[in-house]
Image (cartoon, rainbow, N blue to C red; front, side):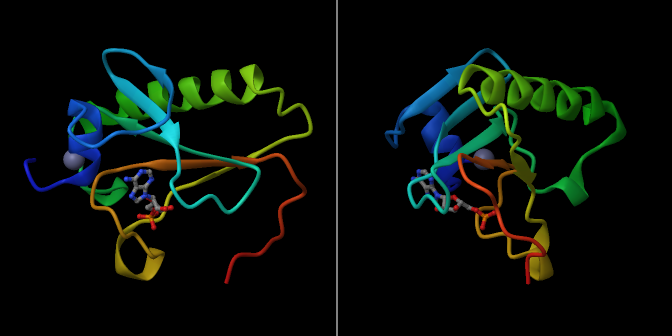
Length: 113
Ligand code: AMP
Ligand code: ZN
């Protein structure tokens, strides 16, 4: 997707502070963090949103969550963390490339509005 900012981050056209990368997944620091730890974890394959995930891509979604678990462990988030996916208009999704926010490093408030 040539006009997708996260695809441009994957290609290196837009710089990012990478946390983890393999052939399927990229994780990088959110440019506007809302918690001491705020990392975005994305599949390299362009998927518009969770609502658009195909059945054959569900294994990839599980794989992404394994990466999230590993990053949380590596960063020492032993007291817990939160994973957020904003989906679509009502979900407040701004970037139309599937991404999961990994938030932690403080006691997070709940519920979200
Ligand atoms: P969402 O509202 O769930 O679509 O979240 C999009 C997130 O992407 C926001 O938290 C932004 O701060 C973040 N973001 C946008 N552009 C960049 C960028 N170039 N590098 C890192 N994070 C970004
Ligand atoms: Zn994309």
